[in-house]
Length: 198
Image (cartoon, rainbow, N blue to C red; front, top):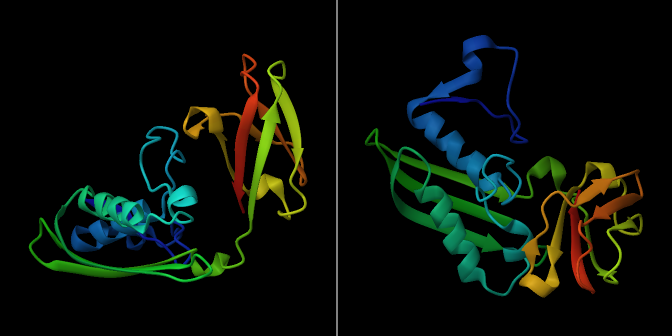
């Protein structure tokens, strides 16, 4: 296994040729880190990959979040067993994880992560319930009260009448202050929850 090295913000590194790549144990550790930082529905070719951080981090069901974390780690290629998992969630929804795994290479890996990633500790969030009247297919929403720039946020729209299922591809940032919701054909009258993280 070969994996591109990551910087302290979790972004790929460039400019050092072969030194920008890791293999063996280091590649598995980087893959675990990348998979834990992933949000569910964020990867266009595998919408089920990652963790439902937006819902699970704010819920009172901490066991479901820990189960998701364990599942992501154990399903990482090259991981044999999860020996230890440390989990701490503070009042500001800041998570600190520590873990120890054994791998196909025989040696253990230990690691730790923080969410949000340190350079982005000033993360802001928009949550709003939006009503569609049964005839609308499009609605523009002003999100400036809670976000500095709607274009830099990650957006998800949930259908409240359908068990908070995700409405894929429904949110388009139009400007710094506004996002457009498009649902076609027009949904039955009801509420949708709009969530944006920037």
